[in-house]
Image 1 (cartoon, helix red, strand yellow):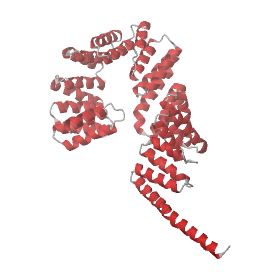
Image 2 (cartoon, rainbow, N blue to C red; image 1 turned 60 degrees about the vertical axis):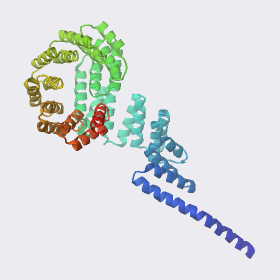
Image 3 (cartoon, rainbow, N blue to C red; image 1 turned 90 degrees about the horizontal axis):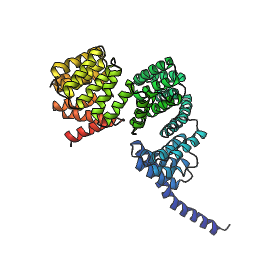
Image 4 (spheres, rainbow, N blue to C red; image 1 turned 45 degrees about the vertical axis):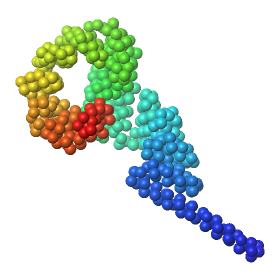
Length: 464
């Protein structure tokens, strides 16, 4: 090679380096800035910077994945999917966010196949947890159960996985549900209340003579812990075992209503099968209540009370129906009869107190002593303390009300009615900062949405 050619080659190389070096420097800067943006939660910016760097360092497989993860964290799921599709080999975290992105865009089948693809490369508790969630959204209960079983084998410390598997086993294999539910309670005491309800139901179901009644009991317990999708399955199984079981039909109707369906066909079927069942009548009363047909509601509760006169729940229902019909004298009498029937049960003292409070009716004479009696009978029940606090609030005893609501919240931090009542007390005391903070907490913390709307309405009203 001549000296001239060598010189020419060196010049070309230098020119190439002069051209490419600034591009590489720009790429390194983008990566550094992306990492900084990621650390402070600026995920959209991080995603864009990682993507720019990935175009320069095309051989670095992880940059497109980082861009995808950052996009998913920024809730830009469509862009995340686009970036993930450029990656040759995903990490466990990448598979998790890739599948989650599909899930969040409503492509459930693609989410499932993505999680399953990830599991072929990584035996991951996280991927099994996400897979279980995807199957849950499809109401594919058996597939969810299998995913949870695999998750627990890899991570035995996840309380929710044990709890969820326990309630699924109540449907598929009730005898196996005990251990999973107890394990959930051991791992997280916040599940104690629900677990106690479910285990009590399982124990009762064990004593019943036929499978149909067993599944009615299981379904009722699942309903009590707000697992109405699974309660529906339990009641449906009860009917499979005995399609003449009137209570199973009535509860199936209730489960349908809880899921936003009508349920009247099932309730009518229940009535045809057993028109003297207090349970059937009581569930029909709930149906008429939701339809705002309060005369029919009263009639059904009255029949339930006639058929089962020792159950104070029907008298409380009669009281509620009279209240909605505007007959407060009759309502008071019904609530008082319920208390007389079950004087040791704090529930009915609390209902009597709340009736008086909400209707500004004999608050001092009946409401206050009833609330105090409820707390005396069950002092560690947040609902009872909330009722007492509400009576204090309505009677102008704001300091007592505040202390009582705080006691209720200390016992049960997620008992949102006490928070709402506490906020009203703060407003009455002109403590607007505390009121705002309390309402904002309910708005942000109530995942069910039941109390979130009330909190937002109060925020709009008092803090426009």
